[in-house]
Amino acid sequence: MALEWWRKAVVYQIYIRSFADSDGDGDGDIGGIRSRLPYLRDLGVDAIWITPWYPSPMADGGYDVADYRDVDRRFGSLNGARRLIEDAHAAELRLMIDIVPNHTSSEHRWFREAWASPRGSAARARYHFRDGRGPGGSEPPNNWRSVFGGSAWTPAPDDGAEPRQWYLHLFDEAQPDLNWDNAEVRAEFESILECWLAMGVDGFRIDVASFLLKAAGLPDVPDHSEAISRADDAAWDPAAHPYENQAGLHEIYRRWRAIADRHPGTVFCGEVHLPAEGIAGYLRPGELHTAFNFDFALRPWNAAALRASIDTTLAAHEAVGAPPTWVIGNHDLPRPAYRYGRRAARGGDGWNAWQRNGPADRARGLARARAAALLGLALPGSAYIYQGDELGLPEILDLPPEARQDPTFRRSGGADVGRDGTRIPLPWSGSEPPFGFGPPGSRPWLPQPGQWWELSVEAESRDPSSTLSLYRAAIRLRRDHPGFDSGSFRWLPSVAGTLLFGRGGGLACAVNLSDDPMPLPRGSRFLLSSAPVGSDSVGPDSAAWLQLPEAEQAGQAGQTEEA
Ligand code: NOJ
Image (cartoon, rainbow, N blue to C red; front, side, top):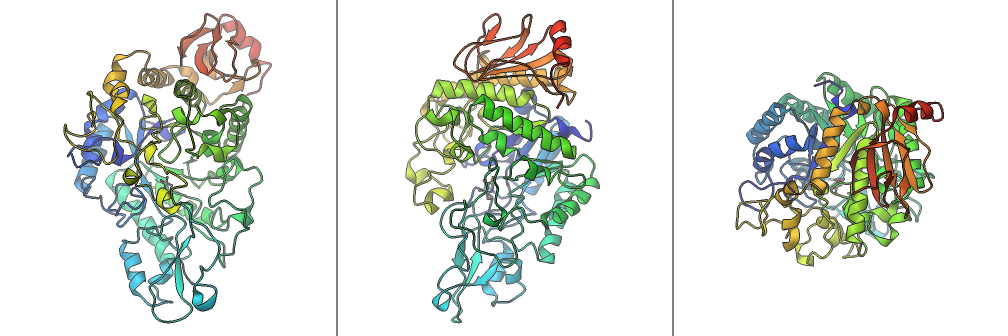
């Protein structure tokens, strides 16, 4: 496989807890992934990214890491991880893991040591401990908010002295932020990368990659600022984000890149919540290879909005010679089949996309999610698929409160139901829970809807019109059609509310986001469509891949630009 496989890879995201449970304890695990490698191979993806599998108290689904060099017993063992890496490679699948450098778990040995150490100690200097404000230090050191709700500060143990000290956590209080100005922290993470590369992993997805450094003095933010930046925010204001996108981060990632370069074929994918130009700043030569394109994922189901996102994404990445990524779902975002089916799906801003606030038209949402999949898979660069989106799984909104585990639910006082409804264990087969997720009679960590037999891999494999069949066909075509090999991209004329673009070799993608049929260039041949099509048109909420007639290819080439 080419060393730069990541330039056009299809990467499948495995949320390990909810993928497949081999031992019946209710949590997915490494054994489950190994047993499902044939499924991933048949699906045709090039690589898998596995969410954190490290020992963790699971305060945030494993994004609270207690030991970066081991595997949580609920997920398996280091030996199991080694075997999985070997098996994946034998199946020609690359394997990326998640690295979580912004914060540790409060159960990490470093934080336990800091907790037990005096103020001003070297142990505390690995984190952000600060004196509180107000009488006796009774108020947090600044006004930063946790992304999960509430203050980003929690009091340190009371040592009887004043002012009281607090520690910073931009996420849950069980996820203290590391101090990346500390040399020991930097050295430790470089060594952790080396450790996993020596085990054979092919890359890392970097959790909140743009958060690691904080502005000197930890200044207050203006009252209006969101806890997390907005990928679609054209007027991004650095003063509102003193914990994000700090200039010194680039040096950290240049050092990481040098490590990756010593292991050819390795890739980094940064989770960077910034507009396209901001992302591209991390993808300059010698820095990260790729980063998530949240801007695209957060756009409403609207032709002009998506077109603008594609344009700015392509231009920004082109300028630094890095491939874009196309993402419509992950374990944090509401499922696309839900998102695109809400009343607000056509308008609204990016913030709206994160909300799980009310009902959606299921059929419409699914039709659009299928069309969006064809759109994302047709664009130049790499594409990410979040497990279960290939089955068209809906968002589950009505989980009982006692089943919810996402800290967002608790920290927001229930105002935000959180992300559990996006993380329901996958249905594989059979007619009743656990639908092959675990052995018969086992109880998945989150309840599965009784109806999910109809969305199982088994059921969808039998149905040529299923979402799974569509994904399989699309990924196969993406591999086989030479038009996907080139980086070429050009917009072709199309009616309002629709998108039409050409790739190499006469390959084109048509997406209809309007309420009327979308006429196609005369003589186009359908290669694949997300829904039944007319003889020369694509219906509303649908997309198709086309082979353009020779004349059309020649005629259009002069009229439109190569991106
Ligand atoms: C981003 C991860 O995707 C999310 O699941 C997690 O809660 C936060 N980072 C904190 O680690």
